[in-house]
Amino acid sequence: MAGKTKDIPILGTAITDYVAARLANSNEKPGGNVSGTTDMNPVKEQIDLLVKLVPNAKMVGVLYTSSEDNSIVQAKLAREAIEALGLTYTEVTVSNSNEVQQATQAIVEKCDAIYIPTDNIFASAMPVVHGVTSQSKTPVICGEAGMVENGGLATLGINYYDLGYQTGLMALRILEDGEKPAEMPIEKSTEYEFAINGDVAAEIGLEIPADLQQYVIYPEK
Image 1: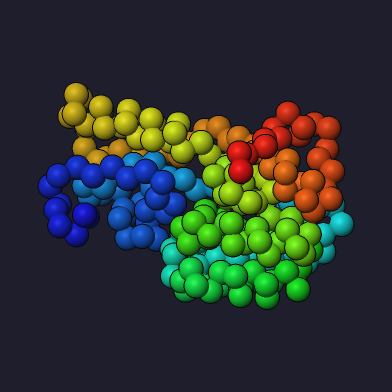
Image 2: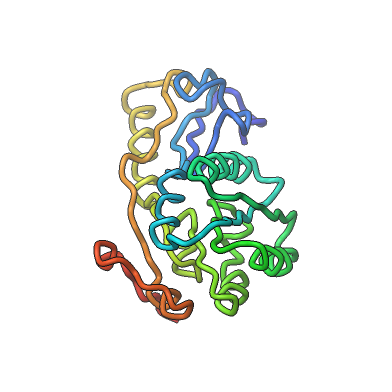
């Protein structure tokens, strides 16, 4: 879309890094006709959640798609957070959905817990991931709640409904107040939500800490 027009305002939502995706000059001043909201995760806090739920973890594996800019950015942040805690980082990447099962099987042999960012291929393939990790009893911390509902263990992530609403408010400022995307900073979510899959926790034999019990969900099967 951005390649087809330089005049019509475009607002993105759920785009992780506008600069890395070559849609904006900077987050503070996009400079073109594209602005919007980012779904960048609180990656450090998600790794902290992993450590809280799996305190004995020594090796943390990261799964992501090697061709997704958003996943590459988050994997780099995850590595920094993991190594800052004195843990060992390992990763396995995929290039398409057909590789998800093999990649998951490969990484569970190496690690004590897994982190998966908001990756499009893995988001749609979480039932496949769950099929492997439920057998290996490997906890999986995900980038967002939908991935938790589909087989991950837990997240501290954004609410996509709220993010869409926030983007809609930006659209009103363009339509009603005449603001220009070039001058509208990329906005991010200001609140994050816990989600913990109670069924998965039971499957892998993991006890949820008392202060997180209120965030346990039991998705319909």
